[in-house]
Image (cartoon, rainbow, N blue to C red):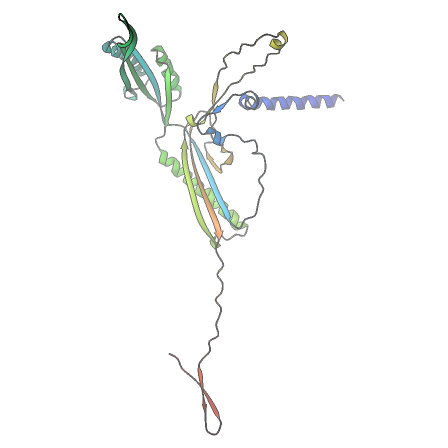
Length: 337
């Protein structure tokens, strides 16, 4: 009996550990997530029926499909920050924002970011108006008059290492620049990535063709047609959000008091393309957000129509008959040229 109890405890402990390994995102997503998928990440998300086995139906057509995916760490990044400055005069506004950007540039130079990697893109420079009341004897008017100026710029900062991004954020915060617009990812050798994917696809395709050959199928007796595709996805396409919370309060129900709901924090996580459906995956282990480049090729082999043997026709040669006066018959053939 003691052995049975110990065994049960071990099983329960193993199950609880396995549930913990699954992580919060999976358990939360089934019960208390208010989520909205971003970009086209949902296309590659988990489906409830992916454990079901497919019904195999024999078909005279042979389909060979190879899907390859490559996870590439970006060669460089560009962070874009938005800065807005207001002032009473155009000169004051320009000087204030110039002072902030010069300090930021100096701080980043001390971190190893070159001046050539720092670019300012002016978005707008417009006057700001306020409404004043103009009273007359029998009327009242609201008139807009210039109050100051607003200058808006985007700052583009290029960096090559992920660790530099924290330093950039700190430098921007020290200069009252908080609005991070986006981070772009770039690859220097994109053609080399596609070339490597083509090589891997050909290897996998030859193995599948050899497999069918060993099954007894002669692919030379089939007519092939082909379709191919390639794509490139960036990390921003695969960020999803969720809210992890529990709003049920049993104490509030017992005391019959109203519940004041707090603002729930929205969390984001990176959910890249799963390589579950891929035949070839280059660099499958992902630690940081990466650029995902994929190629697919599909060959469809249709049996060639069987050629019927031509029917041999009997050639009838023309003949003529010569009957002599004594009644004898002489048969001769007519020669044709």
